[in-house]
Length: 240
Image 1 (cartoon, one colour):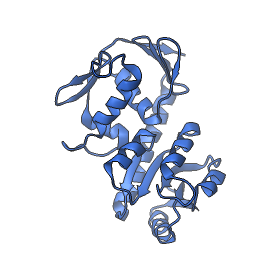
Image 2 (spheres, helix red, strand yellow; image 1 turned 135 degrees about the vertical axis):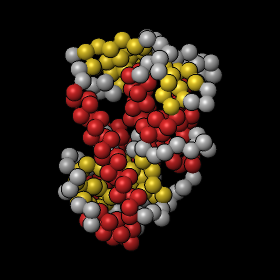
Image 3 (tube, rainbow, N blue to C red; image 1 turned 90 degrees about the vertical axis):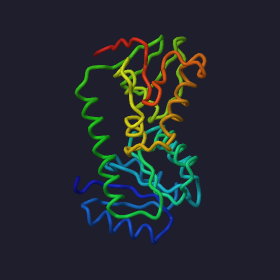
Image 4 (cartoon, rainbow, N blue to C red; image 1 turned 45 degrees about the horizontal axis):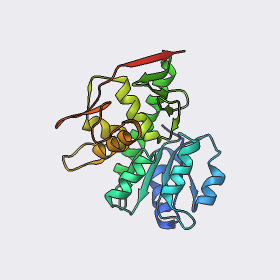
């Protein structure tokens, strides 16, 4: 991963110097933006492989900026922020971030998280390039794997985040098989699961609200008690 370019969006000069030292020492190239406006001027750069993003920016909330970035780009995003509330973490992951790191942080953890996200996204790109599947049809729903869109049985486009897309793709690709909570957390943020972590359940709940007729009595995504979740409907794949 040497010479991989990372964009770090943060207005704290001290943190910027610290992160630069960490990244330079591990073979990464880092460029900085100290507010959302500067970030937007740099984001057309296709060579940026990953974005580190603070939530508290001087001109725009980082969560809003991440959502805007995700609407036009699949570039991996890792939040690097002092906001440690679970609501912020869940929101960040739901709008499409690939990981969430709170300050203060250790160099080894930061580098390991960056490398993990890069490996996962690069593997996903490779897998997408190796498959001929372009569409998954289930219970009348249509998940388009080319443009990452979801359409209802009535043909209406339903907004989904990149995280929701990855989660739904995992479920349809393993229909009638149980996806464990640990696996869902890997999709959400590539971290290990603990019994107190409800991020996986909240992500499934958000997805159910979009595809189930009655989210309180789900018929498509069933709960497998104490284990995880399962897409229980048949899936037909369309290939190119």
